[in-house]
Image (cartoon, rainbow, N blue to C red; front, side, top):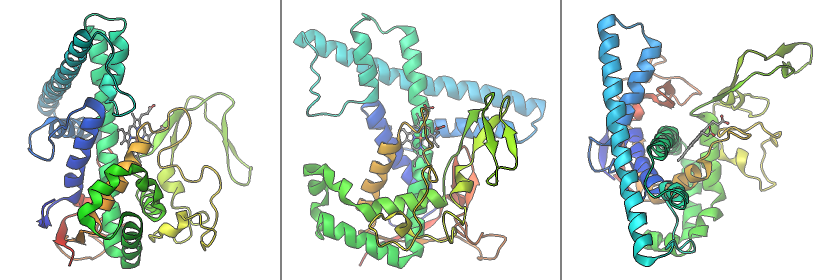
Length: 363
Ligand code: HEM
């Protein structure tokens, strides 16, 4: 990681995230950390242009230019993903032809998502059918869209809140020392030899949960249904949902002071179930950053795992200090909503200006 002043922590974390998702999804890094022109930057451009289309009224010329750019980027990014899928298909076919059997060693290696799908198809398809190729491509795109910015926003906001809350930072570092050992030169070896150590970090998990409460990066929607009504708390009014798109307002729920006292303050202890917590127990379903039900977030375990790994790698080695230019007056900052790092809307909600940060090696 670069040291000194960086213009956007969020962009840097998003690049790391994209490379992790690249491995998980396709078995290869997307090299987002190494170069500034890659699949991820093109997909980011694409999502910004698409979103721009819905928020401003463009002229005819602009409309034409946008639709051409959207088409060009959509084709270019699909081609890049397709190349990888074809490579994985050929590789798998070769391995099977050479060895005569399925060589997958499920005990020792995690399987990229693409391989899991193709391996199944290989049982019934001799060639990679166009329908399979486009289905896998579109799904990989969805995983990138859904997974990169969300997780990057949350990790950046976590580092921001830790920089503003020295007691929480101290407690987090202590947990890492206690569980992973204070000699960080062996950190990676410790994690690799016993990955389950990452499940023994309750305070780190609470930091992530509290960050997702304060800075829920996305909501979701459901189709209303006949007979499914939403009732007010006092049960005096009942709203039918048939014909409506219902927005699941996790971000609003997570700031309800009845459920989360002092909602604008960062207190990971709210999520410590150690019986000593001064914070109220939460009713079922009152916390839903990944939403719930059959369409719940597919990547939530990966998001939490990645977040823990990055916090473990960064929190003890570096000191982070927000480096916003200009003053802290109310026109630049929102008290209770992250001050200078308040959320702004891109495709997902992201920290304002990506959080410019001053990063120093810890003494
Ligand atoms: C902190 C990070 C993340 C948050 C807060 C988040 C949140 C969400 C939410 C709220 C939904 C909508 C669920 C619903 O409507 O019930 C969703 C869907 C989804 N997420 Fe995530 N997500 C995160 C990270 C990831 C990651 C890392 C991946 C994949 C690598 C991912 C993949 C998906 C996919 C594929 C869906 C669509 C599931 C479906 O429609 O069946 N997400 N996510």
